[in-house]
Image 1 (tube, rainbow, N blue to C red):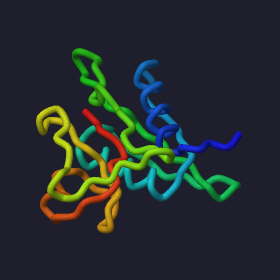
Image 2 (cartoon, rainbow, N blue to C red):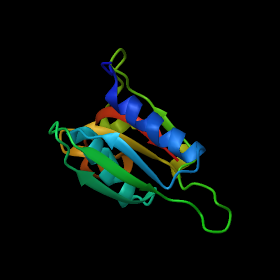
Image 3 (cartoon, helix red, strand yellow):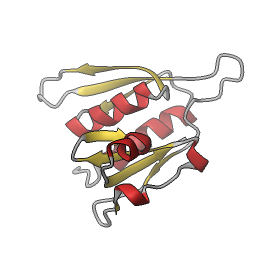
Image 4 (cartoon, rainbow, N blue to C red):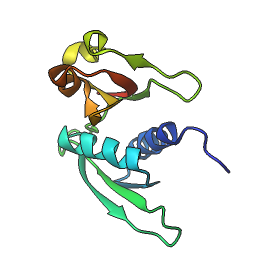
Length: 134
């Protein structure tokens, strides 16, 4: 089966793992997914991640999900895909979206790499809005 939107698949796998209260989720790797995973880690939405090589050379990303020790609530309450292969969503630096009044993050693919909306504003670059996380 060929997946037409690998980033949507990645987000769905993470979403499903959170719903099922899994500690770790495995997703097929790609460069953009690795970058999105690094942003999620840097912003404290996931505990840890590991890139693994497989025989088919694609590799896997193992993501350790983060939960609150007392309430058992996930650090990620919502993962929302914005841009899709059928309808790409590009925003200039002046028109970047505010996610949950600045409490969430928007992950963008820019000429400076995969970064958050706040970093893009600071660097004054626009790009494709991949997803919202909060």
